[in-house]
Image 1: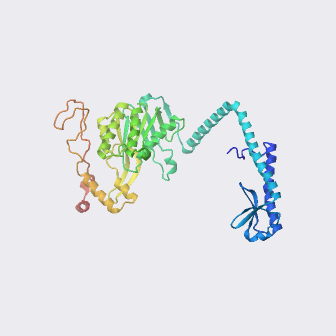
Image 2: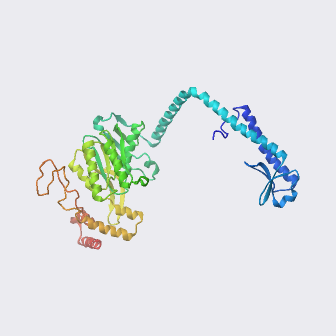
Image 3: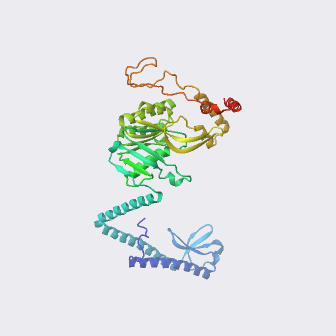
Length: 458
């Protein structure tokens, strides 16, 4: 603490320097005293030590007790040794202790006086600190921008040009510097005219979360006055950036992962405006599939039609892709490209965002990469194929628009209400392979081999 010395530099105060010399020289004296006593007594194991109870003392082991001179005054008896003092040692102890105490007192006094002289000039000190901190931030921006080839974004007023957020070849400011492979840049386009919301689907580990966080980071960097990791950027100011990413619980407050997720989602819906940027990553995954899809759908719809905030929504609920059909001027679908080698069972994540949706997540492939047993992977593929060949819901299940709803055969009263199944049947792996076949160039032998392969997989 500041009352225990070592806060004032040597040379600042003469009196303090003198006291420090006394203290330092006295410690040297103690070492010299120990060596002299060893020679006088012939006790090579003799040592001089210090504690807060007895101060400085001479310690001699029991094996050398007969060599202890009469001038030694016994102070304490221990199991293996005896402790002694001498008049000469106690005199030097008083000098050392008093010097150290005076040093601590004097150092704090000098510090206190120095502090008091600053009080009238505290405003000047604060101004200097503010200027230095601004220089520090701006120089860091400049260094970062030059080092990583950032560009100056075009900043326009909040809401101007339909609240456009247009980024060409954007990059994540952190990920691009820590990964070994070349970072794949991506474009972004959002506005409040024909693309309020971008729904992003794609495989696990393909980079969806990185991409949406990248956009939020670029917007934030632009608004704090830094260049951005992109080849070009045009950004209409946002009033807030809302994010709902990751998964975590709050056990100390008795809140599950899903409850935490819903609390954060509620905060977004209750506070976002049409000038906000909203980043959502897999909303609804903490509960059952049906509840999760329903909540995610309703939340996305509310953001797009009521709040009208610019939104990036990453999801594995492929049913949400239907929102772009219902709201073609508000919602656009995007996905992350992959290359798939069906024969080898290999999936390559290309990290490139393109327009359009996808209905595959390749979760089983990622599980295989993680090292799940082959038996589990094989069984998972069997179950997946079984699911994909069935409709998960009956055809009568529809999305209700408000209160007016009737079955498929009947007529909805409001002609503007559009109905369609919430879940659509998915084609199986084998069906996809059949659709990709070039029948005109397929030989009979190749056809038989294909049929044999399919039979083994059924």
